[in-house]
Each structure stands twice: as structure tokens, then as C-alpha cells.
Image (cartoon, rainbow, N blue to C red; front, side):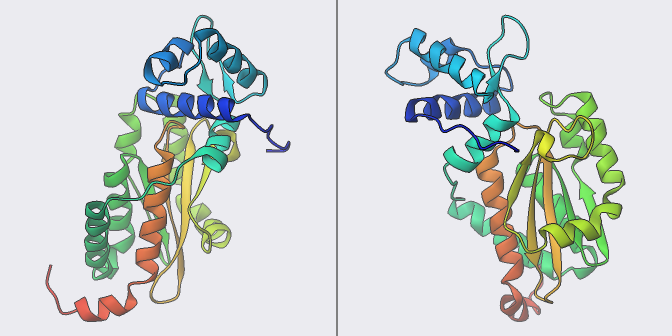
Amino acid sequence: MANQPSKLSQRQAKILAAIVKLNCDTGVPVASRDLVEKYDFGLSSATIRNEMATLEKLNYIKQPHTSAGRVPTDEGFRYFVNQLMDKVKLTMREQQSLRQEILKLQLVNAEIGRRLAKMLASHTSQASFAILPEEVSAVGLSNILDNANLPAEDAKEIAQFFDRLDEHADDMIRDYGDGDAKAFIGKELKLSKHSDYSMIVSGLRLPSGKKGVIGLIGPKTMEYPKNLSLMQYISKLLGGSAVVLIVLSTIKF
């Protein structure tokens, strides 16, 4: 964003967070009555409408068409991710499952990228990719095509990005190979003229010391807290499992 985001009051921040969460859950615009019914703000409908009007003036939410509720803008999603999002801790069961899958994955070096991308797509229901030394893999496009929250034009752009993923590989490893999980929302992607969707990328370092990148692509209504936490956790597991792999190298799965 070129301009510094406007600071929101605590009440406005709560309302924006509620709009983002409800829009992500339902995939439809959020009206003031939805907030009154779903959340106990202790505010009147008129007050909530006034705050939503302010959020709209600040370009954090918008009305997609007449007589509809409001949806977050790219700036609204970005403010949520940067300022309001509670970090999600994966459950012990999720952590254990991911650890087991990663350890099995590390033992199959020939197809680690594709299997990793497939695992990401399975856990997130998004399209995913893995860029590793000498291997570029992308899976889960069917998740995108089946998602009613993602317009056909966006799905086409994602498919085109996947077709050219090998062309972006070196740049992505250079730009994101050392970084933590990061979300790019809507026009921040700059993949095309439309880009009305989001991508999460995370750098990783393999036990060999080489760098790679894993990523997710999906609608702007994706589950940012969980997906960011999951990507960060997987990167950590992949980068820190060299000693464990020595112990498990003789175990059959």
C-alpha cells in the first residue's frame, strides 16, 4: 500500500474483524443486521451502521452492488492480517499429523515437492505449490475450480500462473526463500490485471542447506490465521528435521 493505513478505534477494529471473519465463513457480503445477530457488541444497529459507513469511507470495506452488505477490500484484509488477526495455534493432533507426514515425505526425495504440495492442498483446501531445487510442483487446482467464492476469471489466472510456475521459480526462491510465511492479498500480487485473490508463501531451508518456497493460492476469503500458522509450522519442520531423519532412515512407513 502506498499510503499509511488509517488507525481504527477499538470499536471499529472489532467490527472490521467481525466483517472479515463472517465474510470468510459465508462468502457473501455482510450486513449490519448480520453483525447484530452474530456478535454481541453491545451496540445498536444504528451505531454499527455508522461505524460501517466510516470503514467504507476509509476504504476498508465496500459495497459490491446496490442493496447488498459490505465485503472487505484488499486494505481491509491487509489491516486484519497485520493488526487484528489472532495467531492460531495448531492442535496437538494437527501438529502430530503434520510431523508424521513431513518425516515420511523427507524419506522420498524423488517426489518431495509434489507430495509436499499435495499435502498442503489437502490440509487447506486451496491450490498449492512447492518450489525446491530442481523441482517445481503445483497441485490442488480442482480445489479452486470447485470454490464458489472464486470467480472464473480468477481461477483462470491461477491456472495460468501454475502453467508458468517454473518461470517464476528462481525469482521466488530469491525473494521468499529466507522469509517467514507471508500473505499477499488481491492487487498486492501483481500477477495480472485482475488478481482478486490471495497467495501465502513461506521460505524453507532443507536439511541439505538449500532453499525453497511453498505456497497457497485461493480466494481472499481464505482462513488466513490457520493457513499462515500451518505454513510456518511446515517450514519449521522441514528445516529442522535433519537429525530426526538420520534416526528414521531405517524405519519403514
